[in-house]
Length: 353
Image (tube, rainbow, N blue to C red; front, side, top):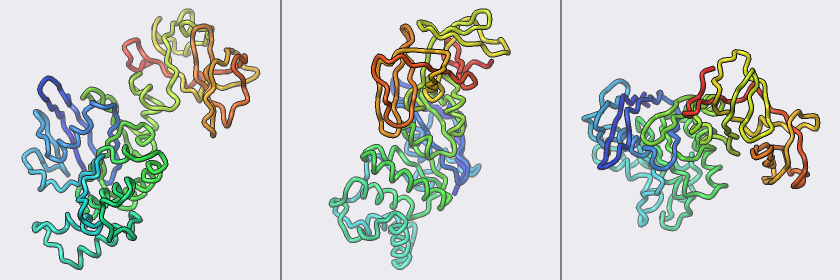
């Protein structure tokens, strides 16, 4: 496997800058997730690494070797797409064997059979080897697509939202299997998604892209607990973060349009006007709580219930375990975990207090 480096990559298309001075690396054997909304530049990044798009500026290196003038076929990367890209008239066996039958690889018939059977066993599709791919379910087709990528042991795996077309239950199952496969194979993997749950549960590290710019790179814990901007704070986390304008005066923080007043951090470095972010799990219901508000909406999800609590004109989200027994209109008391409050400037950047 390989260590992949992107150094100051810029890519322009007519009328739009898809990538602007993007730099990050994917370590040897790392599962790196590129997270961002549609149009952020995620797929363009993958295509540049694969050599399918040539960047306008910057360099791409594999293990310190410059790839800028290396053809896609010589980069030895495997791409797994959102669409399955299989040959429908071929059997599963022949689809898996296809990359190994290239004249450049000179793989023997016996070696092809061995690698295909090993790959099929890893992905639990051994019973499908004789079946035509046109007769497979979506989940089965995506397993075959992933298998066709791993069967030839490439230097780098590039995965472009490979789970997005699957239903929620199958997506969860394949997410676990992909994670296990990557760890056991030790493969260098760059996985692209707009799904923050996929990013948080699968990644060793996450890079967040927006409008062609790389905003933050870090572990899932870094991205969730220390988001560098309000954009990232709102992108990551379900239910969404509570984000409000706030003011500070004489050591007291007031959340605008609410009855919530809190002590300011002791270092006293906050400006007069800023934004605060409160994760719903840090709004704790407590019959002896110092804050109160009216329940205006409850969203039962089985394992937990999301409560919408209104304080004056401001609504906060809170989470309670299980199915809530509270009723609309109830007056709820709560506390706020001050140590977990996120502070941002009015420009959206995390405030370095």
